[in-house]
Image (cartoon, rainbow, N blue to C red):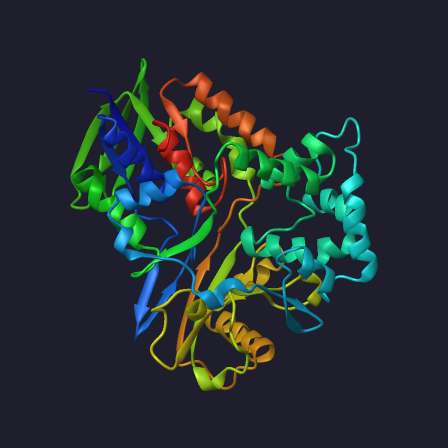
Length: 452
């Protein structure tokens, strides 16, 4: 029987461990913390259910949906409420409903008449010759103009990556845009052609956001239960050595007992910045040294609970994104109790405010009480909340989301070179192949066999 050791018990490591186990391999997953799931953490207190990390999972295919149901999570699956269909974007200090289609774009106050005509002109766009990579800001401005960059893409990037579109790579952070341009010159026409091709193949699945009745942590908890004793929490890796074509890992378990396992395959699923702290052979550490340069800006997530009567905004949507042009402290906020049921007691509302990121990293580096005060001020000013919250939880992620900035191909090349140089060594995580929870699951599962 082939064996495998997975170092890292975040969602990638857990999914990978279970996929390897299902493929008939002897598996051991080593996680240094006392809980699996990485950044996926659900908090429960005083009748509130809040997420400290990711708030939802985007289901992009029937195969991913089937994977979740295969974990026994079908009865727990929650889609967003009907009221969560609206998305808001801040303009001139007021939340405006974001356009969701052609008619909405024509009527939206987010863009001027000139900007709307510029969108029509994009239909005739051509890709410049010799252009290999550019920033997302440059790409969007070239196709759609500065207003779309400032009041659509900039806030969207702040909500997804907590990143800066002037630094993010269009080709790596949003490959679908680059692919559409490569195919048709016009991004709009390229996306339409892609959608039509999917329908012609009979692919009619519509992606949707998802959580669970007990919160997103139900997902890693379910995989951990499937892994059983193969998952080792509070495990400290003491040494890693390459022995011919195999790998020897010495580690200490939660009770202080040391043991050594020799394995055919070694998978590293920890964040890229943590690789330098692993006791790897010097040659491997040296080969991976470039990965320490991947940017991970800090992000603070602040969950706030109010009596419904204390918030003036109707909260009839998913939440609100905040463009950098608006010069606010927050990146955006979710209307968490409007998004999924069971997030707040009757007569109460739960909001989640995000601060910091590449835009204003210094805010996420303040003391928790200062961060909470800033978040409350933003909610009071932008949503008409009054008084202090009756529930508050501040979670700070000092290095939150890897940024797929211009030049990211250098990191990918180095990863590939390392794997080629050291057979049996594999690197996976949200710094490679997509940052979302759903994409991490897909990447991990398909490292073993096709999902679905």
